[in-house]
Length: 399
Ligand code: MLT
Image (cartoon, rainbow, N blue to C red; front, side, top):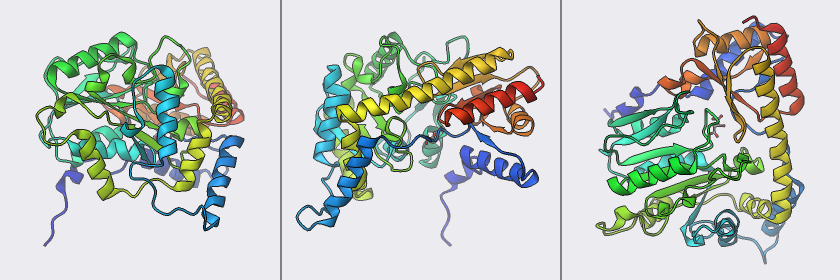
């Protein structure tokens, strides 16, 4: 009899956002008249920018003509798109990344889940706690057991310092999901120094870099000298260009990571090997949309959408603070992290907001033990829905 991969049994029975959706559906069935306001999953809501729509249409038109039709694309993704990413996201910021180091994905989530497969099954792994659940879950599925949780607390501004013990892999997310905290340059430098000293690799999740407004805050790990020697960066069009449904992202794997020295094949080569076996590339239409989104017009239009989400974040912060709740994040990130009132844990406060205000949030405990006692609110809704949710919490919730 074939046996299942029992590592799956070590996971929570359902993925965090599936569990939230289940609870929301149950409540809706109980109260069909209730209009639920969704500040849970970080799902974009504003329409695609006009320049992107044109790019997508042009992508479809290319497929309609024999002269321009394309099937499978270039191995690491559309060369024009990789060049545009290297130029706009890195070289324009004076960061030394070549298009050949960029791999196109169908969104950061898949690569974030898969990248760990390049490394030793016995590797020790550090995670920020709380963290995006994909990091821990995929390492559990891979059978790893040596985990170090870096406590992100109010005392350290929700950005933990590097581990004190040895680890081999370190997941870092900044701006952070879920806390909305952003790592300062000195903190990232301390991680790079740690990684170089320990011959460790940093897996840097930059999915929310486009929300950074403070020019002093780093938007890429490669802003730190020598990060090319020890860091892989994962990013996405989901949040900046509204591609949560279109699906497109990228991963930067520098050609010479320090751990490559003794190995017959570089991590870059192995990732290419992995991707060519498991993945046939992102949709060619989506990739044309991605190119359009990185034109000056596309970038300017996306920035206006991001302004809308950041204004939402401000409204959430102000509204919740005005009723005495303590809030964090939401200034250079689309997530607001709220401390639960005394006596309520994350799920209890989640239920209270659902039942009393009809607002769906995300319980902090779903992101790790140190998320207990907090809730995450997403600013990705339409402004009128965010305003309605904040008003409902202010008027109906008794703290
Ligand atoms: C979230 O809500 O944490 C994100 O939307 C999840 C994701 O991007 O996969």
